[in-house]
Each structure stands twice: as structure tokens, then as C-alpha cells.
Image (cartoon, rainbow, N blue to C red):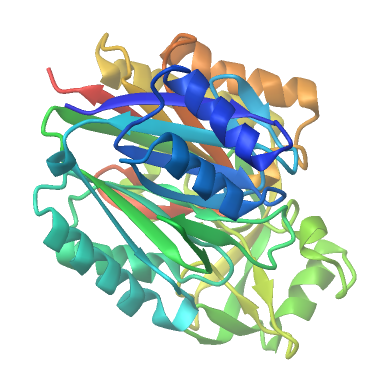
Length: 397
């Protein structure tokens, strides 16, 4: 059976940061394990992180990605040197790891298919997949569709798209001693005693009438309401066309109508989309395929809905746990829900409202601020933006 351990730190020296995490998560005298998953802010020396992890855990497979900050059982940390890990011990036949060095909008299906085929060849008994992918211009729905074509639509896919410090310029993924830019990593868990409970919530409300996608190709949108897409969007947001992403992402949440059969389970009628890349020709990349005719709404945040939706989500998860203590919690938060949305007091409160009802100070917890979230809702895998998404692992009763 797999056992989970976690820790986070803001130690500046990269080698010392990884050493502290492993020593805190495991013990100072025994830092070896079988798998290390880590999230790092963009300021670390990634080679030093990987080298130190390998030195202290020579038998471990090591994977990870960059993010805009981490959330551990110690709380949230959005410094440039934030680091968090999940260390796992257990039989080699109860997990598998695969990776690819490039996933982008136009190749999202084929790249994810190669990843999934490699993963299932390594272990055909996988019951859940932790998926970490570049968030710069991925067509996340196509990646989900591709993984499902290999593993089936009932396979829970959870995780996030990696990010930088909210510049949306590049992101990095790690596997073994390799560092990729715009790559992807998948970790399949095959411990038959494990079950996963997943849910996500955003807390935004739509405003005004929708506009239509009038010219697009895959997930690249050229025109909205017959006008250049980026210019039209920033105009409707009251922002200059030159506005940088770290200013537009927190306020440019677009909403798409959810299929009716999933609205109750999601506690919302709409799912949010974030634009993470624009081109010099005025086009922009959506995180999912956006065919012509798609209706998109502008939204505004509602703090009452954010906190209320979070409490409802956590309550639902507690009920589904059925008095079982979580073995581990994986967590993905949109980078716009960190310091760009809340001050430090409210941010600490929102983390406390997640953690306190679910676990105690010993429960392993690995979270990140990324560009998007994968979560299995009402029996279907979705890609989300601007959400808090929780993935709670328990033992089957």
C-alpha cells in the first residue's frame, strides 16, 4: 500500500530547501522514498532541486513542475522560492510515471496520447491519474479526451497546468534529472485500496450578455463578435490593449455554459476560462477548444460566493469521506485566487476553511497556484479555471 508524506518551505537556497522538505516530510535519518512529486516557484535553481532530491532519495522517481506559489499543510506561500513536496513510499507496481517534453495547443491530443500509452504500458492497473501540464497554450479538453481514449472516461484525472509567477511566459516540468519547458508529466496510482474524491468551485457570477466566437481554429480565437479578439476583450474589460497578463488574468475570467446535467454537482451553471497567451496578430489562446459560435460571458468575482462555494464544496467532500480520515490531499488553486485576489489575512482564512474540516496537522497536503485545474466532477473530467480544486485520497472501506 502507498503511504504519503508532505512538507513545504520558503528556504532560499535550493538544495537546502529540498533537503528541509524531505527531512520534515520523512525523517532526518531516513529521507529515501519511492516517489517524489514537487511544486516549485519560478525562483529556484531547478537542477539543484533535482540533484538534492536524488542525493537524499536515491531510489525515488522524481517529477514536478513550476507554479506561482504552493499550499502545504503549513499554509500558503507565494514567494519566488516557495517549494512543496509529496513523498510517497510503496511498491513499484502501485504507481507509474510518464512524461513528454512538449505539449501545446495544436498537438495536445497527440502529445497526451503518447503520454497515456506509455503510462498504461508501464502499469495497466492504474485507477487515478495525477496530470501536470504546461499551461501556456494547451488545449486541455483535447488532452483529457486523449487520455480517456486510452484509459476510459471513468478514469479520474486530477491536477493542474503549471505556471510561472503569473507572467504566462513559460513554465517548466521535471522528470528524473530532465527539465522541460511546456512539457507534461503524468503519475498513475495503482494501489487498489485507494479511492479519490474530487471537487472544484469558483465563486464568480456572469454579467451582461454573451459575445460569440466568430473566427477560431482549435483553441486559438481570432475574432469575438467579428472584431479582433484581444482588442475586443480588453475593450470590454476597460483595459488598454497593451495590458500585461498579470493584470488581465485576475479580471478577465470568461464563462462558458455547463451542460445542464453537471450544473447541480458543480454548484454553478457556468465553468470559467482563462486566457493565458496572446499573439501579435490580436488572437488569443483559450485553454480548451473554442469553435465558432461558442458563447462566452464576462464575469465578476463575488466574495460571498467564493467563501460560500468553498464551504459547500468542503462539506460535500467531508460527507463523501464518510468518517474516513484522508490519507493525503492534492490541491490546485488558480494563481488569480492567491495574492492577486485576497490579502494575506483572507488567503490564510480560505486555506484554513479548506484544511480544518478535512484533516489535522499530520495529513499530507500538496497544493499549488497554477494556470488551471483538472477535476473529475459528476463522473466527468473537466478542465477548470479560477477554481479551488481538491483531490482527497482515502482508503476504500
